[in-house]
Length: 212
Length: 137
Image (cartoon, rainbow over the protein chains, first blue to last red):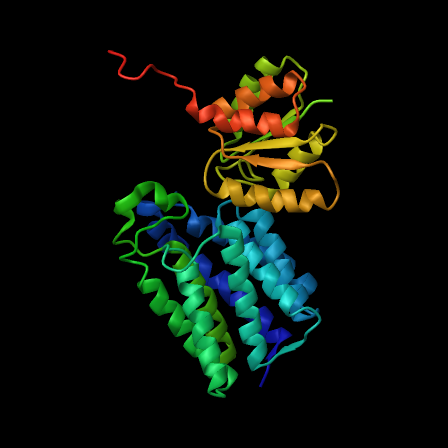
């Protein structure tokens, strides 16, 4: 069964709900190694997305994702605005005109989003950023597609890989973003951006798998 | 024609303060615009505000953007990409320290130097000693 526009809308609604619930947790993660605004910024951005979502809910998946991207760019205010904004814009371009996404499309979308984040943030894996959740997620998606798994399992393994990647940021030294000003003191903290990236991918796996 | 300046900061007041300092040096000869804070005026950066600031100084002979921290760079890149679709006015982002860079750029722009010259002068701002090395207190 492909991912439909209804799935996409349900996913984005779930992201908004989860980021609202996890707002304080994300901000706490951002407090020792950042500017303590990650949860607040993303919550503000996705609440703005929720206001725009009804106007595009009937459109193709590309238009929905591009609207998410442009809304995040104009409303988030922190580094996550340009980064997630670019990720959703690129994913939107990769799904332009599509009303259904199949196994290979999932890989294309993730790949486009990751490339967008890497280009915008000039980040590579191992620098304690969103990339450390998204890069393993893409790898897991590719492996799952290669094994001919169905979409529910592709999304599940993608989300699990993002979670592993997120946990693996704890011992890393930050060299990007506000955390890089802290140098060695950034070691021992889980990266907030990798955490929100996992939450976003987990929301997709949760809503697609269970029809919440 | 002179080069215009855009000052991007996470803080509304910091951006406006830097514009104030730079304008004192430019003596009205340089278009300088501030893009500080989020759209609500909180700490952060706003792509939309930066685009508006670029549009504000678009009649200049090129624009140099000076910025404060981290995400200001990404927000400015996105704003410059959007601005490039509506204007062919060249834009350069500077790595210069914000205050010194803005003051030097204002002086260089006010004497009619080119965008490249203004950008190069601002980029050297970090080499200017504020305090003599090993100066006893």
